[in-house]
Length: 324
Image (cartoon, rainbow, N blue to C red; front, side, top):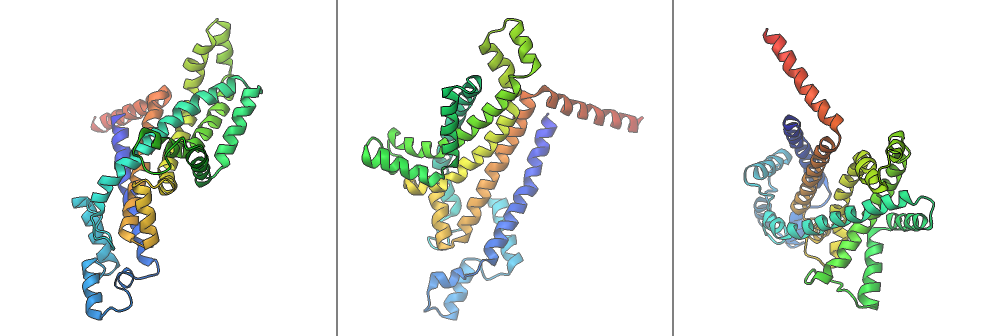
């Protein structure tokens, strides 16, 4: 198991390197000159050369790429903003905890609400409650994030004045951003849980458990849920990335000073170092989430653990035979 985790961590290195090269190449080939954008029309060749050297844009493609990779690997330095001249790493340290808190709390809400509601909908199949939850899930899953955010802002913030509409200064101000981020994912988790639970509860071993006199709660939580967690965890891992990406919409609508507003402003200004750094950070988070999902597979399903153990034993036997 430990070897598998180490192998998955090592696989993250070429993935991150590939993402870095692709993102840097796209920004490098994007039309427009950041130096001219910063200096304006009244620049001289001397000013242009000095500014290009200051921004490390006086080198060719491979020179810029090599300096960028070296700075990240050796100093964890993503460079500086073209316009504010502030360290991108410092801005990450200040803004990322806000976005991470929104994402973590959103994922907790997603699991705490989506999983029980999906199970309840499967158990009460074809009932009024099942139809109601299914309709709500379909509406939330189909509704774009910015529409849900604006509706919540207008209804609860402007009309009813129950909740703040900007910032994260008070506990109440977290409700609308978290709901905007989490509700579409709650709907998807609920639908996935319902579908998988319906397949599992019709299996023979569930009928056997009922015939033994086990309580319905024990059957659902100990036997049925455990056997349908693999696809649910897969979808949940994808939803984590969706929650992080949705922060761009949520933070801009509710004026939250996190990674979403930082990245959006950089895209509008063509501040390529910030855009590159934000994409790399998102890619790293997605890789970490996928690693956690793979580990959860092994922890939940003993067949996967046995496969890792058997593969390790085979390698040991093969090495022993070669030695002898």
